[in-house]
Amino acid sequence: MNPEYVGYAASALSVGAFIPQAWKVVSTRDTKALSTPMWIVEVLAFATWATYGWMNDNIPIIVTNAICFVLASIILGTKIVVGK
Image 1 (cartoon, helix red, strand yellow):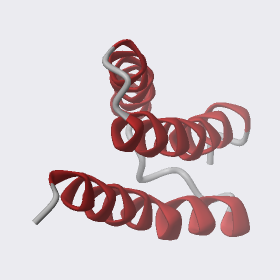
Image 2: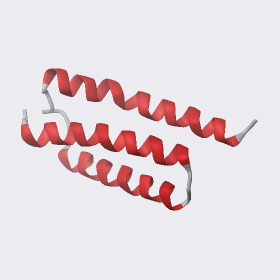
Image 3: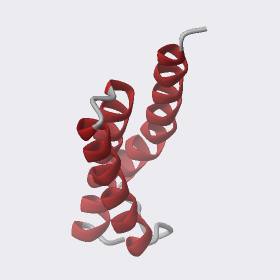
């Protein structure tokens, strides 16, 4: 089995795990149960992983973490702006 396929499968699962949370936050604006410090660290972690992937020319890591960075940023932004 090609390791790239495992990377793409992991990417799809990682992004798929974030979509329901992002959708719920965007549609309900309810973020009171979410930890702001955790989401700050999460956004920074995704940015760092995407940078690492870029530095190593690893497309699955770049794509996954770039998408998760955007989704986590939306969640964090909603938490900060709406704050309820």
